[in-house]
Image (cartoon, rainbow, N blue to C red; front, side):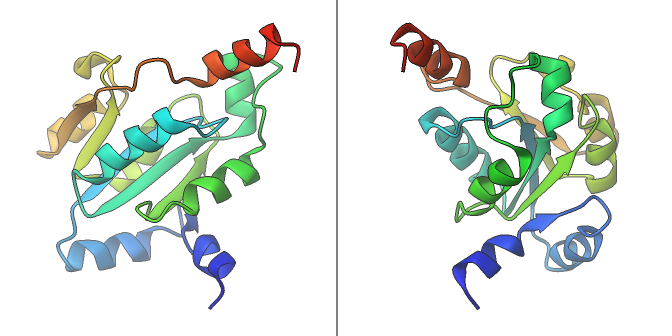
Length: 165
């Protein structure tokens, strides 16, 4: 199997992940979920995802679709299309699955996956994290990860614009 085949096998839809979830649960694997745009992948993203992955056995990333990013961040975003973003994320060795979602929030995806641990950046108040009440309702955990200062897609874009690159 080629490396590209291995990467492609990590890309799921909300419907196609269920057989894999059942297998992971049968094997008593701890499922971690996080979500985001991951528009321009950078050190802050990798650090955040590595820390999230360390909290369990299988890391699932809910990835905002291109259309949801446009609604959330404006008409000039995303910089990278959803196909490119999902391939880059799936290529990371500690990422188990990537699922694109079309909605503005990942709530329905979280409800479908029922992760053991829901992870977001420490810039979120836990009680305000989408899915908090649902995950708590069945005994799941909500965890925060400290973000790496100075690393964000917005900072990268501003640096590019300032330097007229």
